[in-house]
Image 1 (tube, rainbow, N blue to C red):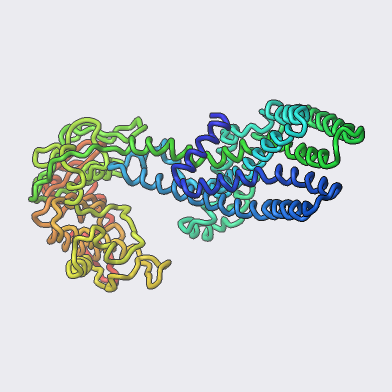
Image 2 (cartoon, one colour):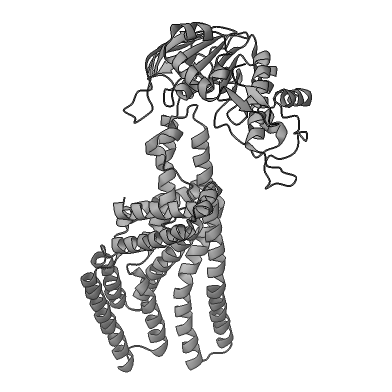
Length: 595
């Protein structure tokens, strides 16, 4: 897409996003472009009036000239403020669109797709200015171009040949320097690699999740050196991508100098020969100076920077919606315990050559609990995503009481799920909102859920769960784990039909796990429950256990049945039991894991 089309697309986006401020922006810009030409005309007029003063003519002429000069000094500041405001508001508008595009789709494929994983905040581009500053640069470059156009038109009234000659000279730089600044090469592989390294080093220094290792292993100097080295490499790579070409620049400079010397010299000749008056010469020379802004300048790169965010959102918005789209059915979910069955299910993530499941068959009877065990990468968590309908299977069906999950209303189905995920969310909201994000439980049920999850030490339901807010607090990993379990218990008290527990006690000690899980079993009794756990002491308490190996159910049955079968489950169980048969609890007492 050429600079002209990018510019028109950017201006169209201004209007779509912020029509009111766009009108103001254009109004100030156009007035500012006309003022230099008016000032040039008024200057010549004042000189003429002074040379041939008429009654009462000098004062009005000087007032008009002074007023024009004052506007020329003030208007750029107002224009800069409006431009920065337009850019900042446009950035917010684009980010709002991007956020809506990310959260609106029913599924997760658009967020976990490796090809869409490079989505970043529109206004955080380390290779170019923020959008607010980029719009300011566009305004500055466009203002200069419009000054050149108005100056050329006004100069034609004084001297058509001078306007024609100078416009040709200055406009020719667009042709001569068309490859002097190859901005499209800013996205070259060399630039992208340097930017990737520089951003990673920046994250190592700034992000708290890296802080411990950086300090523990003494990586301070390495991080700083890496950041400095790759930022310099990034700037060098960008310079190499956009460097000026010497021959076109020399040729353009020679043409511009020769053309201006010829035109201005002939203007001087016309004045000295008496064909032009002094006022005529002064106005024409000032206008001739304004024509220079027709030359090749910064409009191309400024427009490119400002249009980058717009183009990214315009391109990503439909892709995100398409990738994450999961059409919802219309059937309501039965208001009772449900049976869930996976029948010949095959599934693989987008753009991955590996299939997670191939012909998976699994049944979770209504009101019963099923534990899923298996090695890392066996597809345990992927099963949770399918059951929550974050993805649809590539083949086969997931049945809920005999009805295809795709035929059910997706929001109604999810409202009936109480889940705690292995990487559950820490909401920077109140304790109440963290336990009951859906707002379906009263305070009494919320407190009961906290108590049953072993988190009754968290008493202030209004306290924000982050230190960055007034009265906020920060929780330990174990406290967050209990809070997440309270979220499940609150969902159960709200009538959940299906309970999903993905490593629900991973951050608890052995004694804490036993206490919390026994409460969970008591609460979920009679509710269809799926448990994923790496601890066999937990998994064996479920009604049934399914061993998933290479995307298929290798073994299934009760703990006793699987132990008697003397297969994968028994070998893994005994291996874990031999290593962790006893543990010490927080009080230093021996605790039997298998008891």
